[in-house]
Length: 319
Image (cartoon, rainbow, N blue to C red; front, side, top):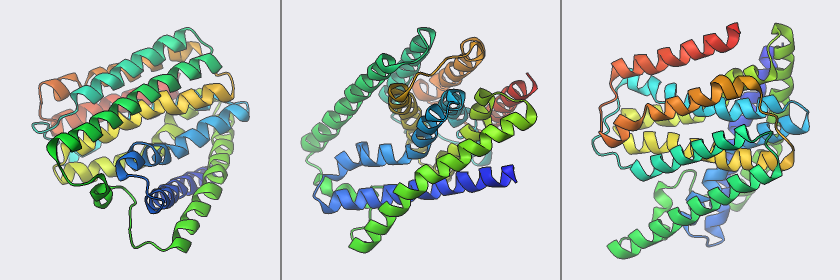
């Protein structure tokens, strides 16, 4: 039953996260907040809410290994699995993909996080450094977004509504309230169920909390990114597919770990310093030729990425 409860907790998390995004986006737009700002803040934080609730809940419940494993494992899965599967299905063409600056920022955030881990355990001051970095990144993105719209004399920012995730101008007030209630109630409930189930699974098989975070929890919380990326790859929208992964990884490191480290200290185990952090960095480095040289990510690369992730999971479970 513990596996069933883990699936139930994960399902509640994913559904509640989607509901919160829809409710928050439409409430913000109804209050007159520009869609561009909503996309950089409400949507970004809303889609990361499941990972955030799991990480904060894990620290409060005394299993910080799940919190750290969730973020590090999710970032690795986002590249090797979330990009590997769509590449295996249909291939991803990078010829029109403009993600160089975002990728460099993500790589810088990864290096910063690894450096802070070696100065661990992660505490409140590490969290402040990560959140300060996030503020700079969001500020730069907002400035560039507004400047490019003004320079190009494009449509008003509000016209972005039709492309904004979860936006529905016709959504009634009571439905917005219902989405918010479902999200706000479901997220902590799902996180609590999943954390409790993951902890029990770890005890059953003699696995550490860190390994459960790196595998079961990390893969589960990467499912929304996987679904989005597969659809984007099939539609030949490589910028959406790659941008989704880059943005998710950056938020995981700077926002989720920043907030979680402020909530409570997070010990960084030797296994993270010796292997997992470097696998996360190595997976990120693998994207360099695809981002800068516009290599085509075909089925062969899909096999390589998925096989590499499979080997990594086997290494985690067997040790």
